[in-house]
Length: 255
Image (cartoon, rainbow, N blue to C red; front, side, top):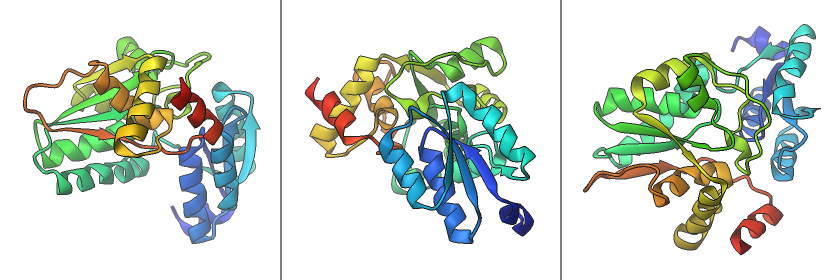
Protein backbone atom coordinates (compact mmCIF):
# COMPACT_ATOMS: atom_id res chain seq x y z
CA UNK A 1 0.00 0.00 0.00
CA UNK A 2 1.07 3.58 -0.55
CA UNK A 3 2.21 5.68 2.39
CA UNK A 4 -0.91 7.80 1.92
CA UNK A 5 -3.17 4.74 2.23
CA UNK A 6 -1.40 3.62 5.37
CA UNK A 7 -1.56 7.09 6.86
CA UNK A 8 -5.34 7.42 6.47
CA UNK A 9 -5.91 4.08 8.14
CA UNK A 10 -6.69 0.54 7.06
CA UNK A 11 -9.88 -1.41 7.69
CA UNK A 12 -10.44 -5.11 7.16
CA UNK A 13 -13.05 -7.67 8.21
CA UNK A 14 -12.29 -11.02 9.78
CA UNK A 15 -13.42 -13.68 12.22
CA UNK A 16 -9.97 -13.38 13.77
CA UNK A 17 -7.05 -14.83 11.82
CA UNK A 18 -6.68 -12.18 9.12
CA UNK A 19 -7.52 -9.67 11.84
CA UNK A 20 -4.37 -10.57 13.73
CA UNK A 21 -2.20 -10.62 10.61
CA UNK A 22 -3.32 -7.19 9.39
CA UNK A 23 -3.07 -5.73 12.90
CA UNK A 24 0.47 -7.07 13.24
CA UNK A 25 1.49 -5.73 9.82
CA UNK A 26 -0.08 -2.36 10.53
CA UNK A 27 1.83 -2.05 13.78
CA UNK A 28 5.06 -2.94 11.96
CA UNK A 29 4.66 -0.09 9.48
CA UNK A 30 3.03 2.42 11.81
CA UNK A 31 -0.42 2.28 10.20
CA UNK A 32 -3.68 2.64 12.09
CA UNK A 33 -5.74 -0.53 11.68
CA UNK A 34 -9.44 -1.06 12.34
CA UNK A 35 -10.84 -4.59 12.21
CA UNK A 36 -14.52 -5.43 11.94
CA UNK A 37 -15.20 -8.74 13.71
CA UNK A 38 -18.35 -10.69 14.59
CA UNK A 39 -19.38 -10.69 18.25
CA UNK A 40 -19.04 -14.48 18.14
CA UNK A 41 -15.29 -14.33 17.39
CA UNK A 42 -13.24 -16.46 19.81
CA UNK A 43 -11.92 -14.50 22.75
CA UNK A 44 -8.34 -15.50 21.99
CA UNK A 45 -8.58 -13.96 18.51
CA UNK A 46 -10.07 -10.74 19.84
CA UNK A 47 -7.39 -10.39 22.52
CA UNK A 48 -4.57 -11.13 20.09
CA UNK A 49 -5.87 -8.58 17.58
CA UNK A 50 -6.09 -5.90 20.27
CA UNK A 51 -2.58 -6.77 21.51
CA UNK A 52 -1.22 -5.62 18.14
CA UNK A 53 -2.85 -2.23 18.56
CA UNK A 54 -5.87 -2.55 16.28
CA UNK A 55 -9.25 -0.99 17.00
CA UNK A 56 -12.08 -3.54 16.83
CA UNK A 57 -15.64 -2.76 15.77
CA UNK A 58 -18.11 -5.58 16.31
CA UNK A 59 -20.93 -6.77 14.08
CA UNK A 60 -23.75 -9.01 15.27
CA UNK A 61 -22.69 -11.76 12.84
CA UNK A 62 -20.60 -12.41 9.72
CA UNK A 63 -23.21 -10.86 7.45
CA UNK A 64 -22.97 -7.62 9.39
CA UNK A 65 -19.27 -7.10 8.72
CA UNK A 66 -19.38 -5.43 5.32
CA UNK A 67 -21.84 -2.62 6.21
CA UNK A 68 -19.53 -1.53 9.04
CA UNK A 69 -16.54 -1.71 6.69
CA UNK A 70 -18.40 0.65 4.34
CA UNK A 71 -18.89 3.07 7.25
CA UNK A 72 -15.14 2.98 7.89
CA UNK A 73 -14.46 3.67 4.21
CA UNK A 74 -16.75 6.69 4.46
CA UNK A 75 -14.53 7.89 7.31
CA UNK A 76 -11.56 7.77 4.92
CA UNK A 77 -10.05 4.36 5.67
CA UNK A 78 -8.67 2.11 2.93
CA UNK A 79 -10.39 -1.30 2.78
CA UNK A 80 -7.98 -4.21 2.62
CA UNK A 81 -10.14 -7.15 1.59
CA UNK A 82 -9.18 -10.27 3.53
CA UNK A 83 -9.45 -12.64 0.55
CA UNK A 84 -10.59 -10.87 -2.63
CA UNK A 85 -7.37 -8.95 -3.23
CA UNK A 86 -4.49 -9.84 -5.57
CA UNK A 87 -1.75 -8.95 -3.10
CA UNK A 88 -3.40 -11.02 -0.37
CA UNK A 89 -3.65 -13.98 -2.74
CA UNK A 90 0.05 -13.64 -3.60
CA UNK A 91 0.87 -13.68 0.11
CA UNK A 92 -1.09 -16.88 0.58
CA UNK A 93 0.74 -18.36 -2.40
CA UNK A 94 4.02 -18.24 -0.48
CA UNK A 95 2.70 -21.16 1.58
CA UNK A 96 2.83 -23.34 -1.56
CA UNK A 97 6.38 -22.11 -2.22
CA UNK A 98 7.42 -23.33 1.22
CA UNK A 99 5.55 -26.62 0.90
CA UNK A 100 7.08 -27.47 -2.46
CA UNK A 101 10.54 -26.43 -1.30
CA UNK A 102 10.31 -29.01 1.48
CA UNK A 103 8.29 -31.60 -0.48
CA UNK A 104 8.80 -31.00 -4.22
CA UNK A 105 7.21 -34.36 -5.04
CA UNK A 106 3.88 -33.52 -3.38
CA UNK A 107 0.94 -34.94 -5.34
CA UNK A 108 -2.03 -33.35 -3.57
CA UNK A 109 -2.62 -30.36 -1.31
CA UNK A 110 -5.77 -30.17 0.83
CA UNK A 111 -6.85 -26.72 2.01
CA UNK A 112 -9.69 -25.34 4.11
CA UNK A 113 -11.83 -22.64 2.47
CA UNK A 114 -13.45 -19.58 3.99
CA UNK A 115 -13.70 -16.85 1.38
CA UNK A 116 -11.22 -18.63 -0.87
CA UNK A 117 -8.09 -16.49 -0.56
CA UNK A 118 -5.89 -19.18 0.97
CA UNK A 119 -6.72 -21.93 -1.51
CA UNK A 120 -6.60 -19.56 -4.51
CA UNK A 121 -3.11 -18.33 -3.69
CA UNK A 122 -1.86 -21.85 -3.01
CA UNK A 123 -3.45 -23.20 -6.22
CA UNK A 124 -1.82 -20.55 -8.44
CA UNK A 125 1.65 -21.08 -6.98
CA UNK A 126 1.35 -24.88 -6.94
CA UNK A 127 0.20 -25.01 -10.55
CA UNK A 128 3.16 -22.89 -11.63
CA UNK A 129 5.76 -24.89 -9.72
CA UNK A 130 4.34 -28.41 -10.01
CA UNK A 131 1.89 -28.74 -12.90
CA UNK A 132 -0.51 -31.60 -12.28
CA UNK A 133 -0.54 -31.31 -8.49
CA UNK A 134 -4.06 -31.84 -7.18
CA UNK A 135 -5.51 -29.09 -5.00
CA UNK A 136 -8.66 -29.97 -3.06
CA UNK A 137 -10.73 -27.59 -0.94
CA UNK A 138 -12.60 -28.41 2.26
CA UNK A 139 -15.59 -26.58 3.73
CA UNK A 140 -17.96 -27.29 6.63
CA UNK A 141 -21.34 -28.65 5.63
CA UNK A 142 -22.79 -25.77 7.64
CA UNK A 143 -20.77 -23.15 5.72
CA UNK A 144 -20.45 -24.25 2.07
CA UNK A 145 -19.56 -20.77 0.80
CA UNK A 146 -17.34 -21.75 -2.14
CA UNK A 147 -19.37 -24.85 -3.00
CA UNK A 148 -22.50 -22.70 -3.32
CA UNK A 149 -20.63 -20.17 -5.46
CA UNK A 150 -19.31 -22.88 -7.77
CA UNK A 151 -22.77 -24.38 -8.16
CA UNK A 152 -24.36 -20.96 -8.82
CA UNK A 153 -21.56 -19.64 -11.05
CA UNK A 154 -21.15 -16.56 -8.87
CA UNK A 155 -20.62 -15.58 -5.22
CA UNK A 156 -23.69 -16.20 -3.05
CA UNK A 157 -24.51 -14.26 0.11
CA UNK A 158 -24.74 -16.82 2.89
CA UNK A 159 -27.17 -16.89 5.80
CA UNK A 160 -26.44 -18.10 9.35
CA UNK A 161 -23.62 -20.66 9.46
CA UNK A 162 -23.64 -22.66 12.70
CA UNK A 163 -20.18 -24.22 12.49
CA UNK A 164 -17.39 -24.56 15.03
CA UNK A 165 -14.96 -23.65 12.22
CA UNK A 166 -15.48 -19.88 12.41
CA UNK A 167 -12.45 -19.26 10.18
CA UNK A 168 -14.24 -21.08 7.35
CA UNK A 169 -17.54 -19.21 7.64
CA UNK A 170 -17.05 -16.28 5.26
CA UNK A 171 -20.30 -14.49 4.32
CA UNK A 172 -19.54 -14.91 0.60
CA UNK A 173 -16.79 -16.24 -1.66
CA UNK A 174 -14.44 -13.77 -3.30
CA UNK A 175 -14.79 -13.16 -7.03
CA UNK A 176 -11.07 -13.57 -7.74
CA UNK A 177 -10.78 -16.78 -5.68
CA UNK A 178 -13.91 -18.21 -7.33
CA UNK A 179 -12.39 -17.88 -10.80
CA UNK A 180 -9.12 -19.44 -9.68
CA UNK A 181 -10.84 -22.29 -7.84
CA UNK A 182 -12.96 -23.01 -10.91
CA UNK A 183 -9.83 -23.31 -13.07
CA UNK A 184 -7.20 -24.82 -10.77
CA UNK A 185 -8.90 -26.65 -7.89
CA UNK A 186 -9.95 -30.25 -8.54
CA UNK A 187 -12.84 -30.35 -6.08
CA UNK A 188 -14.39 -28.74 -3.01
CA UNK A 189 -15.67 -31.28 -0.49
CA UNK A 190 -17.83 -30.82 2.60
CA UNK A 191 -17.22 -32.15 6.11
CA UNK A 192 -19.53 -32.53 9.09
CA UNK A 193 -18.96 -30.92 12.47
CA UNK A 194 -18.10 -34.34 13.92
CA UNK A 195 -15.46 -34.88 11.23
CA UNK A 196 -13.94 -31.47 11.89
CA UNK A 197 -13.78 -32.25 15.61
CA UNK A 198 -12.07 -35.56 14.86
CA UNK A 199 -9.44 -33.64 12.90
CA UNK A 200 -8.80 -31.45 15.94
CA UNK A 201 -8.46 -34.50 18.21
CA UNK A 202 -6.21 -36.38 15.77
CA UNK A 203 -3.81 -33.45 15.42
CA UNK A 204 -3.64 -33.04 19.21
CA UNK A 205 -3.10 -36.74 19.92
CA UNK A 206 -0.90 -37.77 17.01
CA UNK A 207 0.86 -34.63 15.82
CA UNK A 208 0.87 -32.72 19.12
CA UNK A 209 -0.60 -29.70 17.35
CA UNK A 210 -3.17 -27.32 18.79
CA UNK A 211 -5.32 -26.56 15.75
CA UNK A 212 -8.54 -24.59 15.67
CA UNK A 213 -11.46 -26.32 13.93
CA UNK A 214 -10.95 -24.37 10.68
CA UNK A 215 -7.30 -25.41 10.60
CA UNK A 216 -8.14 -29.05 11.29
CA UNK A 217 -10.92 -29.36 8.71
CA UNK A 218 -8.52 -30.62 6.02
CA UNK A 219 -7.34 -33.42 8.30
CA UNK A 220 -10.91 -34.26 9.23
CA UNK A 221 -11.76 -34.57 5.55
CA UNK A 222 -8.82 -36.90 4.93
CA UNK A 223 -9.63 -39.08 7.95
CA UNK A 224 -13.28 -39.35 6.89
CA UNK A 225 -12.42 -40.26 3.31
CA UNK A 226 -14.04 -37.12 1.92
CA UNK A 227 -10.86 -36.57 -0.09
CA UNK A 228 -10.09 -39.60 -2.20
CA UNK A 229 -6.38 -40.28 -1.94
CA UNK A 230 -4.85 -42.28 -4.75
CA UNK A 231 -2.48 -45.17 -3.91
CA UNK A 232 1.04 -43.92 -3.25
CA UNK A 233 0.13 -40.23 -3.28
CA UNK A 234 2.08 -37.79 -1.14
CA UNK A 235 -0.58 -35.60 0.44
CA UNK A 236 -0.15 -32.27 2.22
CA UNK A 237 -2.80 -30.88 4.56
CA UNK A 238 -2.59 -27.14 5.25
CA UNK A 239 -3.30 -26.81 8.98
CA UNK A 240 -3.87 -23.07 8.97
CA UNK A 241 -5.00 -21.69 12.31
CA UNK A 242 -4.27 -22.51 15.93
CA UNK A 243 -6.36 -19.75 17.47
CA UNK A 244 -8.88 -21.67 19.53
CA UNK A 245 -10.20 -20.72 22.97
CA UNK A 246 -8.87 -23.19 25.53
CA UNK A 247 -12.32 -23.98 26.90
CA UNK A 248 -13.56 -24.77 23.41
CA UNK A 249 -10.48 -26.87 22.70
CA UNK A 250 -10.97 -28.87 25.89
CA UNK A 251 -14.64 -29.39 25.05
CA UNK A 252 -13.73 -30.85 21.65
CA UNK A 253 -11.08 -33.11 23.17
CA UNK A 254 -13.52 -34.46 25.77
CA UNK A 255 -16.23 -35.28 23.22
